[in-house]
Length: 134
Image 1 (spheres, rainbow, N blue to C red):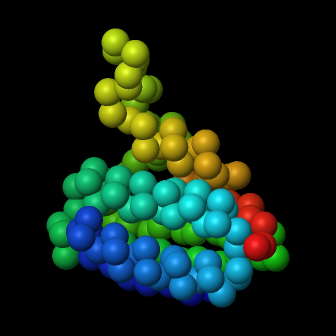
Image 2 (image 1 turned 135 degrees about the vertical axis):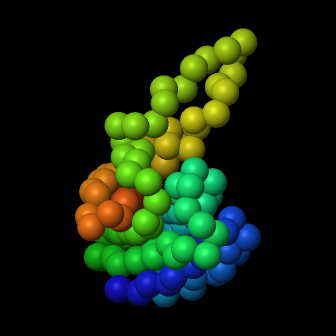
């Protein structure tokens, strides 16, 4: 398992991307699996930095581990309790497009398993993505 602690700033998304890229390369995953995983991780991180209502100096801890067929990414933050699996607003269609709320839909559609827990005043959100090797 590897982990990184980032500030609650969207500008740290580049550092997270570099961390994810290095980990994914070590597994030699397919480009398709990597691109899905990159989008999932980016959407999750940006949603936390945008909506968790934390001070921008608070940390978000991201842990990545894997098996021979899947990668698990866990985000832990001390923001307000929010279960993205049940608390996210339904996407409302207006004039053929969606007004916000698409992040969790993207995350759900590209992931194989999602799990949320509230532990000791922290949001703990784990994403599982199955992958294939190149």
